[in-house]
Image 1 (tube, one colour):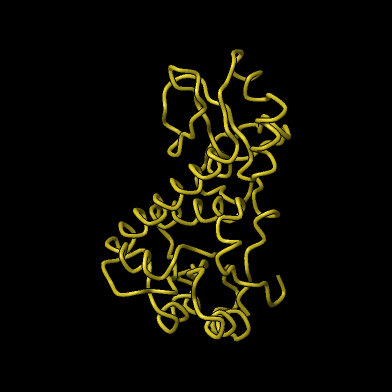
Image 2 (cartoon, rainbow, N blue to C red; image 1 turned 60 degrees about the horizontal axis):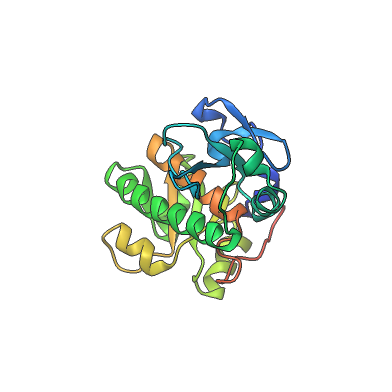
Length: 221
């Protein structure tokens, strides 16, 4: 059976080891993880905390786990302020909305690039073929996929051995691929598709689609 990825368990050093990145420490919980499993924040000239979605902004950065728990803790307990050694203006809810919005935007942009580079396949049958042939080990499922389709994806052997990742809506996925609505996408091995997987994991750990029809876990987990 396909298995819904446990985001809270998968943000470990080995999760994204293929990126070969250095490790950073969360300013809230003090745990270490790879850069692509964390969120980086920087300060604007006005001292306002901003999400550095691509981890490229110059100057000092502060990192947190990609969870609302650590983000909230970092804001409320002034961990950001201690890290930057200066006053920090931060609104937790606005920060979460910005993180979710920008991560989803990057997922869709990179998904389009992955499609053009031949690093993904669409549709349940073709995606299942990719999983069976070991071309893909991750399958993205739109959060608004019908309940019947969700059940088929998780409770049959169609995606056995694959990690199921909850993604944006069918409409947004289809638009990113220059197609009609698309609910299932297999992510093949490749640098661009790995970036999509990394950001989907961060979105999942942030609970981005919990209120939008997230797939219930089924199978062996």
